[in-house]
Structures are given as structure tokens and as C-alpha cells.
Length: 528
Image (cartoon, rainbow, N blue to C red; front, side, top):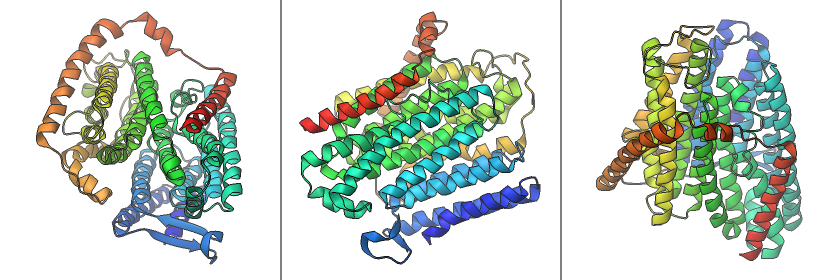
């Protein structure tokens, strides 16, 4: 049955390529995507009882093409299906372009293949396909900034994936196969010295795709989020980068005990801190969200790399949480831009008065990302910090404080007198607003029923200590007070921060950082 998960989005894409200018065809595509989402939900239920494997081509052992779905991949599939459903409804009145609609669902098919494939070379092919599709979507409006950003991004991705390809060659030389399961068995028996170079090459490429420091270059250098349509930015942040996180997990499992968890724990911390600092410096609402993608992915890496059972569950749930609240924030940002005609956080005021529903969804997503009690981010952050050392717990609290400071700035758009600035579309479009209500509701429901959500999604039993959760709530409120004081007296109007906001890297510097990152991994794992 797994082949249908890849085929159905391609069929929808083909339908829309021919009939995209027909509203009925777009309605049919949304209905089909809704059915696809239901199937994805069913797959989560199915994989609770064990993994599902489909062999394509009838070959045996590691020679065939295996599609494998297990609990984690099914959860990623469900998250992807939900966000693509919301984005397709959101984009209903945006464009009739056959190119846009075709590429949108081709991208979903490519990401689905990445979740299910068990072949290292197929991962390379599907990553390249999804990257090219995303770049075309980013350059869709053909503005100069988009064209420049897309070209830089594709060149950086070509270089990054060469690291992966060379590492893949070494793995094939060692194991004689591309199959992940078979290669993992051979790697477990291999000499440590033979694994250092392929591990460094592959993980350097995956680190770039995850957008973690120092390989977060596509955000400041190309300004992709600033120029991208908000629907595409929501997919890039909410789904595309999560796919890279999924690959990070799979490839860490491939190398087993050889994987450098401590190294990536440090990288996750550095990425989160850098991300929140850069977000605090921004005044463009899309760039604030872009740098928080970097900080939240860093937080996910912390959860996955810290070694604790609950922290890993928290990291996985934060993947879901980030996909929900970040997609909601980017999609509402699109509505806000159309209404106000600007993305400057200091020029947008009175959102609650002008568009109350959009304002409520934005507020719910802000409370989600900051980890406010009863919202989805509070549950994921609670478990990330559940069984980690005290120093790491306080580091997570500092990262959360930085997130709160930047979203105190962001939340200024909600209140105050409407400044009267009118964009091209002063009134909100129901097709754009109502689907995002789903994400806003999940921000709240994912917190209020977070324990049940985790138990269902990951087929595991976790419990929340009410006293510990109350302590987290007190820390949040104390952080909110401290964050407001810091924003009011040290952040707002700070000229030094404005200079830092313009931090940029040359193409040469970015490429050098990839090589340096690979070299650091080589040294670290070589000394383990």
C-alpha cells in the first residue's frame, strides 16, 4: 500500500497541471488531499502494531527497492499531509498557474518517498528532486530577489549534496549495498577508522539541510523567506526542514554507536542561541520567523541528541509542534502582508481590530512557539527538559527567554490603534484564513491534550507531573516579565542590533563553512 502514498500526490499534480484554471478541479484536488490525509492518519494507526514494508519490483533481500513505514515515518507523513492540505486550501484563490499547483503536489510526493525509502541512493535522488521543486516555487513570482536567492540556494545545495554523494560512495565501498538495514548491519561490524570520513561527509550535508549553525546560510544569505510566497515559506519551514531532521535521525541510526551525539548536542545549543539572537534583531516579520526556524530546529536536535528517553520524545513532539505553529505563523503573515502592504513589525498595528480571527490564530501560534502553559510548545519543551542535566535545562530556559523576547516584539502587531496602512487586499480572504484555524486550534489542543497526543502518535506512554508542569509555567511567566523588561530597555530601538540584523555571508564563506564543519566532525569523531 505504501506505493499509493507516493502515487496519489502525483495523480493530483497531473490533474491540476491540466485543469488548474478550473475551480472544480482545485476543489477536487483538495478533496483528494483530504482523503490522503485520512489515509495518513490510518497509517499512524497501522504502524502502532509494527512496521509495514512494500517491496517494489519483486527483488529479494537488499537488491530490491524497499518502502518501509514505521511509527516515526508515519507521524512525519501525517504532519506533511495536514500542512499540504492547509496550504492547498490557503492557495485556492491565489493562483491558477498549472506550474504552481503541479509542483506543489510533486513536492509532497518527493517528501513522502523520503519518509518511506530504505535506500541511501534514493534519498539522494529524492532530496535533489524536492530541492529543485522548492527552488522553482521560491522563484515562482520571478522577482529579482527571488531569482537571486533561488540561484544561490541551488548552488549551495549542489555543493552540500556532493558531500553526501562522496560519503555514500564510501558506504557502498564498505558494505556493498545502499539498503539502510543491510548497511547498518555491516557498519556495526566495520572498523571505526573506516567510518570517520563517510560519517563526516554525510552528516555535513544533512546539517546543511537542517539549517543548523554554521550551515544556516540560506536564511541570511539568500533571504529566501523574505522574498518567498508565504505558502511556500510555510512548507519550507514547516515540512521541508523537518524532512531533513527525519533524515538526520535515520542516518544517525545507520551509524549506531558511532554517531556523534555529544557533538550535535553542542551544535543544537549553538544553533538555538544564534537563532534567537538573530530573530531578536529582525524587524521583518518573515525574517523573525525564518531565524526561529533555525532556533527551533536546534532545540529539536538538543532533544534528539541529549540521550534521555523523555527528551527524545519531546524532540519528536517538537517536530510536530513546530510544524503546526510555524506554518500557522507564516500563513497568517501572508494575510497580514496583503492587508497592510508591509512586513515591518513596527508599522503593523491593530491586527486584532482589523482582522480579529487572523489575530487570534496569530496569538495562538505565538503562545505555542513561546511555550505558554496549555499550548503545544509547553508540552514538547517540558519533555525535552525532563531528563537532561541541570546545566542543559537552564540552557533551554535561556533559549526560551530569547524566543519570548522576540515574540514580545512580534506581538506588538496585534494591539494598539489601527495605523490605517492599507495593502492591496485590505480585507482578509476566507480561503486564506479559515484553513489556518485548523493549525491555530491544534496549537491549543496539542497542549491541553498533549499527553494523549504523544501517547497516540508515538505509541508510548508518558505522564506529566503536575508539580513539574506548574514549575515550568512559573518559569514561563517569570521569563515573560524579564523578557518584556529586556525588550523595553535593551532591544527596542537598539542601533547595534540593527547592524547585527544585516549580518551576511558571501557565497565563498558559506562554502568554506561547509568544509570547516566537515573537518570539525572528522576531528571530533576521530578522537572519540
